[in-house]
Image (tube, rainbow, N blue to C red; front, side, top):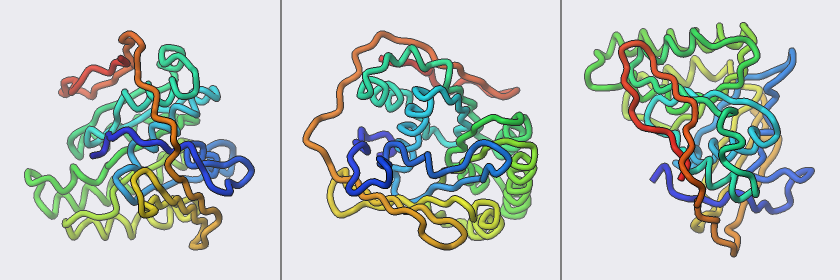
Length: 249
C-alpha cells in the first residue's frame, strides 16, 4: 500500500507553478531561517516524499533519508526520474539512505547528522511502540528523540519528519505534543480527494493554512522503469545488517 505507483504531478490552480510534485518548495530548508517540517496524512505521504527527493536531486539538492520502517522505495525514485526524462543513475549519489529499525539506532542516526544536511525521517515513531519495548522505556526514548530533533535543528540540520497520522499507542499523542512547536512553521497534511490518485495537500504555518494544492489524476500512465540496476548509497548502523539492496531496475 505504501509503495503503490502514484502520480502527483498534476495540480489544479497551482501557486506560482507549484504542484504536489514540487510542493517541497514550501519548506524553508536552507539559510538561517530554516524550519523543521512535518508531513502526515494518507499512506501516500511516503511515495510523495520520494517524488520530492527526486525533484530535489534533479535540482542539485542532496538529501539523506533515515528510514525507520521500510518506507523508502527505490523504484519510486527511478519512476519519477524517468518521468522527468532524467537517468536514475545520474542522481543516485544525491539520495543517501540509513536504515534504523530500533529506537536506539534511530537516536544514534539523528545524533550523527551534520550541519547543512537535508534529511527526511520516515516513520520514526513506529519502532518506539514495538512490542519488545516496554511502555515506560518507549515513552522516555521517544521524548528523547524529539529533544534530539531539536538539537539537530539547532546544529543547522534541515529535518523533515514524515509520519502516519495515528498509532494505537498512547505515547504517540505525547510525541505529537512535544513535536508540535518544532514543526509549527511548516506542517503538511495529505488527504485523498475522493478518487484514486486524487490528492489534496494543505501546508500550514503557525496554525494557519498558507497553501492548498489539489492534484487530480492525469490520463498519462506512469512510465515504467527500464534502466539497468544501479546502487544507491546505503548506510547501516553498528550491529545492523542491510535489509534490502537499493537498486534501480
